[in-house]
Image 1 (spheres, rainbow, N blue to C red):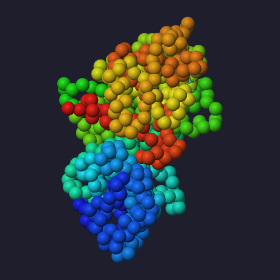
Image 2: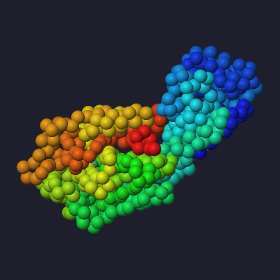
Image 3: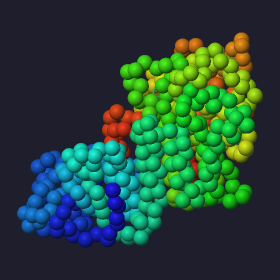
Length: 496
Ligand code: BES
Ligand code: MN
Ligand code: ZN
């Protein structure tokens, strides 16, 4: 969807959205339209006992004197309690109501009396919300009636006093939306197309934005001793890849943060094969990598003054004559040995080598990994919160704060030596699964053994990378979870 900004003027035709606060006040342009229609808007607001609550909406079609106009009134809540996130939700709601009305283009008037956000900030965040809500994965719908490209406005105009400020702010928010969209595209892609090499090719496109992209193949990874990662991919006909993406916007003396993603392009479980029912969900088992790639795109797209490294381990987990077996013992890049009890606990094998590689080569000030790692985190937190683990209090606090600003929910989970002992093995330094209970925690303990005690956080996004129901800012499907949090986190803690 195309976003544009224009100076406010009184509309005479088309689809227009006015924002109404909890005191039910009509702002400048809305008031003018109300006058031109002999009070049609205020009559409708009265008749519907409109209270201006967030989420409330009302339509006024072809009011007398302005017959070519369709007006939507959208509630925003208390005008002095707005936040950027709330503005995004209002923009998303505006998109949704005009979309349901079948409009192909619409205008949102960014005027709220007594708003505690600057006009440009309000307008740009309304636009971001509309953009995020408009995402559709319709790439494979070919028929004319298949709704490809239809089912929602293709142009959204925001009218605001001072378009320069709004446009400038949307410059970086639009890049953020591009990053979220890219993560959602990657996660939605079917796995017949989405091989490790295909993923690496998508990463390479970020070079256009100034990201330095390096791709390691199996031969290079073997030389480095990444046998844990390689073991996962050895049953696949497709070559495993490790991609390093570097954005150096911060200059020499700036701190460096690194993001590491699990990129299992399809997870059959391997020889410990998964049941057939629902296995198609495993196309999104590269969601962690998708978030990291999307975040790199957002950060580079807005030319963030920060140094950020993204590393994604890309493999396909298949059963095959060459596949790894339960009972195999592999030596990871760190030198630590792992007894593979269950080949379906593959994500941690991939991340073990990706984490070790990242901290050995780059010595980052912090590492945060993202992975659709365990079904157990969905048992613990359902489909609403991601699980956060961290060995560093400040990092955990900062990450949670950024996630709250971004409107993505994460909940801190415990790490503890008592859980760590549960993955000791008599045959190797550790085994890749613990006992039945606390499966998300023992997975995190496993990863911690590859962090070398540098500040590290792990985010288990198995429950949130995909949503079966729509959310305030997005339709159902791939969520691009963590891209917005990471963008905010970099802004808050790594930018000069
Ligand atoms: N990719 C799965 C986890 C997952 C499950 C993600 C459902 C998204 C939705 C992961 O590789 C896996 O299979 N984990 C196992 C671990 C077990 C064998 C210890 C699990 O959670 O069952
Ligand atoms: Mn698995
Ligand atoms: Zn998996």
